[in-house]
Image 1 (cartoon, rainbow, N blue to C red):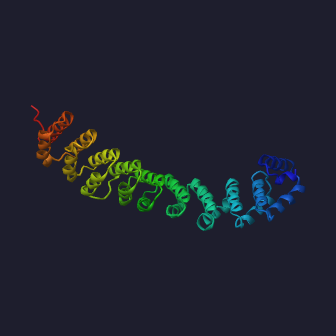
Image 2 (image 1 turned 60 degrees about the horizontal axis):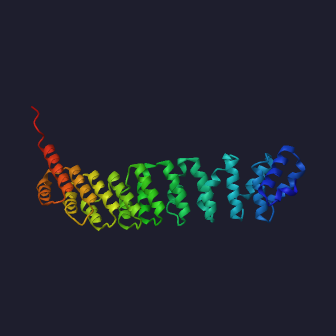
Image 3 (image 1 turned 90 degrees about the vertical axis):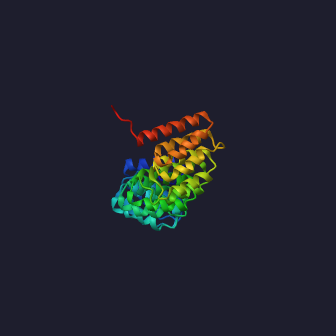
Length: 319
């Protein structure tokens, strides 16, 4: 049994630990305690592994001597061990490791554990991690913030979104802003909309503009629309302009609606958006577009838009 404590096969080691725990044989204990002092970090990790199975106070007291071990692998194993053993008096170690450990893998283990604790006292760690140079640390920190739903942190998320270069993380940051119902100042969403290479990501940003606004004027958004090449992004941005209901967007939308080089579905969506914005002052321009339009489907949509805006401005009298 003792020889199996350091067997390279996990299953063999696990069986030996269980057998020792069952037999309660103290003769094997010094061997395990010596493993905690071994110069070989693998043996020190095996000792920590055994602490999860062998219920003995003498082993658990020895665990904490490995908190600041020179080996990152041992420090990771230590964090996992005290977490699984529920040693609440040592929980401050997770915060220390997440903040100060020189090894990113150890930091990630600590952050993962803290994320699952769901304690709001750790929020500052995750906001700090959102700006870390390691994308995996940023990912774990973002996952935690998605769980916490801290509405006070929208600006921090938006500011990081401006700097973030990982497309997956940018998408998840937009998800977080949508969950919070706050654009955090809007600069992050605008940055994605204007500089993200991935069209799907720009589409997501365009969707967020409609739901959250972007703290910018209609001129800026219609300028982005005129420079966009991908039809899916253009359609979503047109639709979002309708949700914002900014009357200043109507002239640019009419230009797009009248442009025969644009896809028909985009032109129709532009007319639908004009109808949603419902600006009576735009009626002359809409009528001019209606008179000159030859595409029948679009002409019908323009006619419906004229009728609807007129009915809203001059409701028919009920007898």
